[in-house]
Length: 287
Image 1 (cartoon, helix red, strand yellow):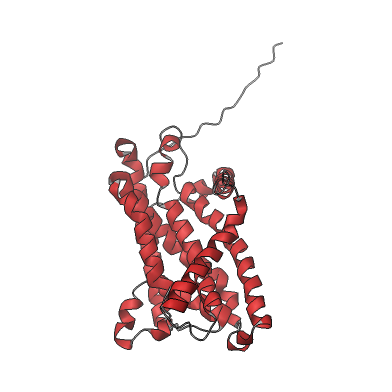
Image 2 (cartoon, one colour):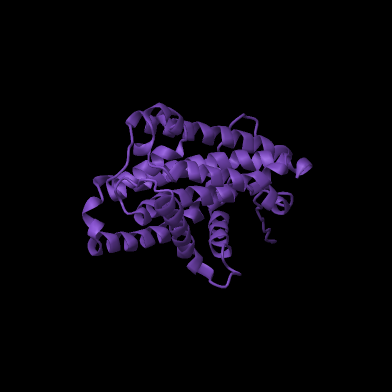
C-alpha cells in the first residue's frame, strides 16, 4: 500500500486591463502589506539623513509662517481678516502643506520608482496612495503644532477675542479628503506627463510654489468683487478658506464655490487615474 501526497500551488494570473478606467479595489487591498511598508518608507525617509530629523516636520511650517508674516503681513500690509498674521498664515499652511506634500510626492511616481516597476508587478496606484497616507501623519503632527500656537494666541495675547474655533472643525477630515483627492489627481497627471516629458519635472516645484502664493496669501474677503470669480477658479481656495473658517471663525466660503471645487477635484482625480493607468502600460518604453 502506497501513500500518495498531493501538493497544490497557488498561481497568480496577471492580465492587462481592458477598460478605459479600472480601479480594482480588491487587488489594491490584497497588496495592503506593501502599502503599509511604502507608507513607513515615505514617512521615515523624508528627513532620515538630515541633522535635525523629524524636527523638520514642525520647523518647516514655523519658518514659512515667519517668512509670510514678515513679508506679506508686516512689509506688504496685506490684511488677515483681523486675525494675527502668524496664526492666519499657519492655519493656511496647515491645509496647504498636506496638499503640497501629497502632490509633490505623487508627481514623481513613475520616474522615482522606475526600477521597481520594471522588475515586479503590483498595482501601480499603491505607490501614490502610500504617499497620500504618509502625508496624513505629517498633517497630524502639524495640527498639534497649530493647536499649541492657537492656544498661545487665544489665551495669552490681547487678540484672543478676535477669533475662535467653530463647529466646522468637525469637517476637517472631509477637508483633508477633499484636498487629498485633488492632490492625488494632479499628482497622477504630473507623474504621467513627466514620464514622457522630463522637462516638466523641473517645472513642478515652480507650479506648486506659485499655486501656494495664489491660495493662501490674500484672504478672499479682501479680493475685489470683479476678480472674485477668477480667484475662486482655484479649487484649493475654498478648501483653505474652510480651514480658516473652522479653526479661526474667519473665512469666506460660498456653498456654490465649494461644490464647484469639489466637482473639479473629483474630475481631476478620475481623469488622473485614467491617464496614469494608460501611461503605466507603456512607461517601460519611455522611462
